Image (tube, rainbow, N blue to C red; front, side, top):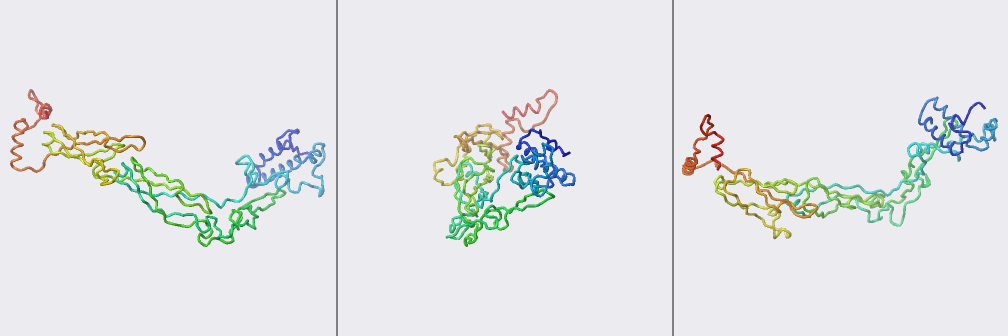
Length: 394
């Protein structure tokens, strides 16, 4: 014979059957008709299949090595060459194995799909006040979900019955068909249309869940929110989501938190910030102011019964607008760890916009005493504007 089958497969004449099979698979992946359509690829595939058929058979390989024509061996002239052996024969592998080898490097055993699947996760929004987020709370929420059917206990079959093996695919979940392309045999598989690839059918489905193994139901959830949470955080409740079809394990529930803005307090990390307006005279003379705490928003909640609802904050004489006083331990409790942030109180000095005659006279007297009746920018040897401002602030 003129064809060098060893060179065609790229193996030595001393190659083992396993080496020949491996070389054939590698080359067939590139020229198989379903991978590389075209007359040249089809012809190349036929040549490779012929080489593999002969070299993988000890009898035909022996005839070939002695210079004989192995295609004449056996009945029918072409004998064992009827299906090109490399595909669909006991010695070779089918095209589905070839695809597996392309992507995984090995063939895999297929089987029916499982009817049991995990349930979906559920996402529930929750709105919290700043005080609830800071000190924790317990919320009640309603969840529209799927739960395991109590009539069939998730099997999907009517009581007293059970799923049966599919008669169409004999429980394999697949329908296999053989196709011939020239002299090559190709096996194709697809999910069984009778059982949808599960391998079993339910002749008598449960009337409560219609064979799905679960029913829709509204559930009430009580969720504990820890102290120190922030907007965007999620509370994870494992196994509280939808029940899986046909008795599958349930999914999870995620409570997504959104903290509402407060009318007076602003949160920065674990600190609370509060702006307190004070009169001009109080800022000049000094005083004390009573400010609310965030705990006051929780009312008479038992765990906050002993918490102060107000704090007395000193305003030193001469306090300027924007002065901040920090009160340690009155901010937001830390989500992880111990302790709390601080409460920052910023004073906003307010200038009166409406004054009566007596008040104006008193202010004018004060201005004269402080030489502040007229403030102007001077040049030359006199006191400058900025010096006068500095002096008036003392």
